[in-house]
Structure formats: C-alpha cells, structure tokens
Length: 296
Image (cartoon, one colour):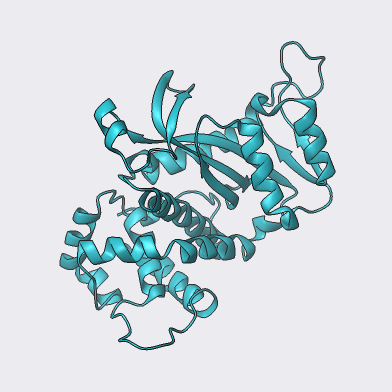
C-alpha cells in the first residue's frame, strides 16, 4: 500500500469520524471495527481493485499496512453484513465529500445513465432476489442487451457526485432524472446549467428543468435547427466519469445479488470516486479523477 493511499485513508477516517458517524447509544458491546473504520476500509477495497469481498478480507488479514491502520478486521460474512447495514452512512459520506469540495459550487452539472448488469444468464434472472427491481435494458456503447439496473448520476465537471440513484432500465431516463432533481431540488442554484445527451430532449423535460431554475444544455437532434451543436468534447466528461466507475472501480463487477447488496456495492464505488476526487483537491493534484497513486 502506497503512502499516498495511507494519507487518503487517514484523512477520510478523520472526516467521517468527526462529521458523519454519531456515537452509538444503548445496550450491547461496541463493535471492534467502528463505523468510521468500516467506511474507510470499503474505500480502500475499491481503490485497491478488490471486487471480491473474500479476496479482499483475505488480503487485508495478511497485509501489515492495513492491519496497522485497522487493528481489527472482521471475517467476510460480518464485513458483508456491516457494509449492507451502512448504506445510509455511505450515502451521507458521499454527500459530505461533495459539499466540502470546491466543485460543489460549479455552475455546470452533467447527467447521464450507465448500465449496472446484475445477471448473465436466464436461470440467474429467474432465481434472482432482484426480480421486480431489475429488468432488461440495452447498452448502446456495447451494442448489447443486459439484465440489471441503471446508475443515474448528476455530477460536477470533475466527476464529484452531486445526486445519484439506481433504477430499472425500463423506466424512461427523463422520468428518473426528473424524480432525482425533485428529490434534491434544494441543491439547485439559480442559473445552474445541466448538461445532458439527446435522450433528454422534449418540451416537457425542458419546461420541468426550467421551472426548477436549471438551464438545460444538450446536443441538437438531426431534426432540429442548430442551437448547441453536438457538444462532442464536453460530452466526453461524463463518459470519462462512467469509465472511471467501470474501469478503475469495477462497477460492472459488483457481484451484488440482492437489492441491499447491489445498492451498497454501487455506493462503495461512488464513495471511492468521491473520496479520491476530494483528496486530490486537498493535495492540489492536477488530475482530480486520477487514482493511480492509490491503486497499489
């Protein structure tokens, strides 16, 4: 483990312990691994590229550097239960990291959706506990159908997550993003620009975003008069964010098989990306979404 990763984990632990985790009350013994340590450990797992929890716990138990940072590391079963139970804390930490980063005040937001496959065979689909939540969708970038969910992300220009959710791919993108914006409408500032793709065209969606105080910016369709052009260079920002989640953080290899499991494992990856961006701002790194210094 590099010194850069150790520094990131230490600073993240302090932030979570001070501002996210509340002291436990009531009866019972306190866990040997605190909630702040648990969340920090999940970030370490993602940045080091361990998609499999069993391999991660086995590695952590034999790593002198990790044992020095985390005196107690639970078994795989306990770790899995703790992470799934910490879904609320994962979301709270993501929001906190966004709020304390300079990009929180960006006037430009970017939104897009990316597939989160959850099954590769018909038998898996029939037996899965995700039935009723997941569905079949089409991935245009890979020209293939998949079964699973979609990750909707509204982020700043550097990739810092502002809002996010998981939804059935059969739901319309405009409907899901509208619901996401309405839920967190208090975060929208006057004059905020929302950059989207052609799938978010339509008078109703434009009127809805305008009523919220958002200025919608999207590429022109072929049947429209020229207004914004294709916005090709700017649209690559969100594509690179999706590539970070899939390539460096293994979004498509999450391995979740239940609603809580999928949500927690996707949240781990979103949190790891947010933590890396936040720390890169703190140290003045030029590339805010470069995690090479932390992945080994």
